[in-house]
Amino acid sequence: MGLQDVELVVGRVTAPRDLELIVGRVIDIHDHPGARAPSHLLMLDLGGRGQREASVPASGYERDELAGRQVICALEHEEVRVLGAHSHAQGFVLLRPDRDVEDGSAVA
Image 1 (cartoon, rainbow, N blue to C red):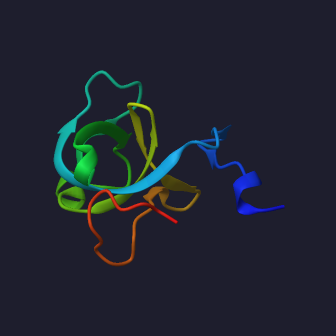
Image 2 (cartoon, rainbow, N blue to C red):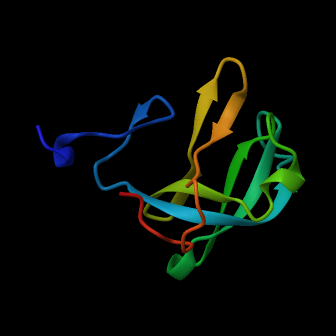
Image 3 (tube, helix red, strand yellow):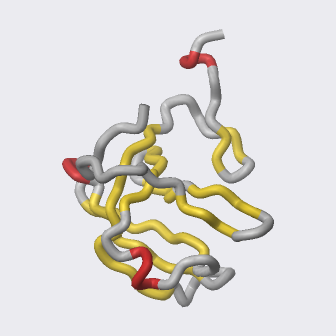
């Protein structure tokens, strides 16, 4: 079984194999008043792919902690999701590179 045969599981839903993982940078943060649960609405810089919005749970991160932070994003067509791990002890924990890379870099 090669890597091309593996499906990525995102948020307990099996994602299609054409899902693209890239690095984005948080450039703006707002409260997300229309969300079902307390959330932050992030504006992300995806390098050559432009800027897109995505939301993340508000628990675990203050707005000022997120500003300028790089995160791992899943792209499928025009939809962008910020990826994280759900920890029983810490709640939602963002996935991010351990060093700064160019915004829009592919995750290998």
